[in-house]
Amino acid sequence: MKGLVNFIKTFNYKDLIQGAAVTFKHQFKKTVTVQYPKQKLKPFPRFRGRLTLLKDENGEDKCVCCMACVRICPTQVIEIKPGKKEGRKTRYPEEYNFNMDRCIFCGLCVESCNFGAIKLNDEYELAQYSRKDFYFNKEKMYVPTPKVEYKK
Ligand code: SF4
Ligand code: SF4
Image (cartoon, rainbow, N blue to C red):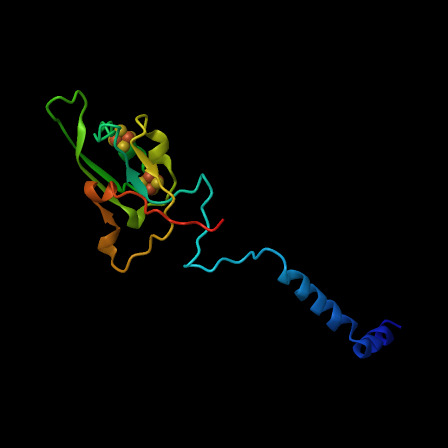
């Protein structure tokens, strides 16, 4: 019986019409695809992107070289050379080197920092052509997150 119904169906184009109706209905729905890379989706607030150093309102290094991030990093990709400056009570990072090549974006460094001196930003286009481009010195660590127009 089922076979007969299927046989009749092939003559009345019911499936074809149903399929066309679904396609037609979706013409008027909001598109769910994103035309990447022209359009980009905003990452979720807890997304963990590139590690970035932060400055305070006076433009000074927030980092005081407590070394908590260095100690907790499971892949040992942070190196800091502490220094002292006149007029500054705490130490500051003379050098802050980060090797993104081996970073696993776990966020432990950020969690361990009691001074809010580092954050994982929302950059996700982190591919590089050369391995050396994964090495960040202090200057490069301060490069702000590029402004991206996200798809609404
Ligand atoms: S996110 Fe994790 S792996 Fe990457 S630098 Fe921080 S602690 Fe290390
Ligand atoms: S935990 Fe924060 S303050 Fe301490 S060395 Fe790392 S970035 Fe600097």
